[in-house]
Image 1 (cartoon, rainbow, N blue to C red):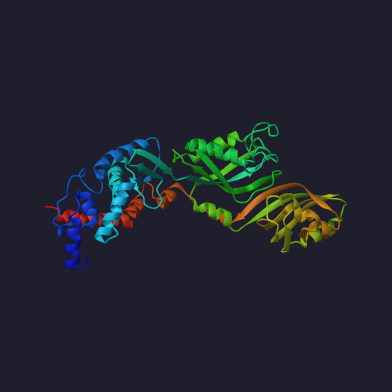
Image 2 (cartoon, rainbow, N blue to C red):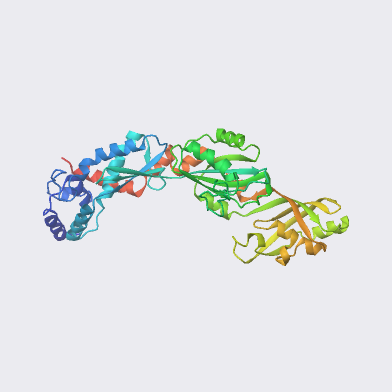
Length: 437
């Protein structure tokens, strides 16, 4: 429609079809004043077959489905009959255009009804809930964004793992070997923390993401280990994390403790997995034969700043790739030495296997303390006493999170209002209004 001739051809082709006002406006991109075609009723429309007449009904269905859910932003999606999509493609071909799909117009009209009615905002990028309406069957399905909670945990028990361990025999189904529990251990840090959070949010499932993990027989003390819990399909988003921390810690019966709970988002999982951090350990070491204290201390100090080479340890070879990993030992201090036992504090790069640094694991870790001291050594007790690094600099409060994801604040409304889809809609409506008598 760049010139009068092509506009006339477009109008002549368009007049072959009986179209409702909504379809005419969409196809003419808000320039209806240039055309004389009169719209027909929605029911008589060749293209939509009365689809847009049902917009208030679809809005009612969606509003009813959303009852009981907490959310600050939403987005509308739709599934329309394949026959209507085929008719639209035929019309585009005849007109020589690639128009805006009728489902986008439908979504927009429903959203404009629901925004003031629900007192929520339409968010095109990060909605809390997407409501999908199947227009053929009047069925609404919800796609609910996960709720993310960041925190740190301490683990005081040497008898529970970080995450739930399915039974290696039945794979979680339940059998004699696991006492029909479906898991190898009665509980885990994951279950102690995530289950109360999931219950409060009334979600359907969870995922626990830790910043590394300690061995089952190791404690996690000091500042705690960072984690993010993903709560899937939550009905409640405004959970009280302060109260939940107390519920978690009371229920954990001194096996574990949750600290610094705050809201996070999906990107924080990537930060968690790829952050640069160091770990500090307390090690109770036992030697096969006593070593003079002065020699022992001098030998230990020789590890400071050393880069060690660790081939995949024997004890984790079934779940880790076989390769050599270079790791740095930043610091190593002797706290005490008595006969064949010694207490050490070791600070290392993330991913260092401390037990193998001490034992050597049959030569798979080089250098190692057993070779350096000239006597076999083993770790009798291991505690992680600090996890240092970028994770500790996170600063997430509730108001900051709401601003970021577009929930109940002026900035998020302005962001949603400036989205290109909204801008295009305003232009279209403005042009149509100016053409109205």
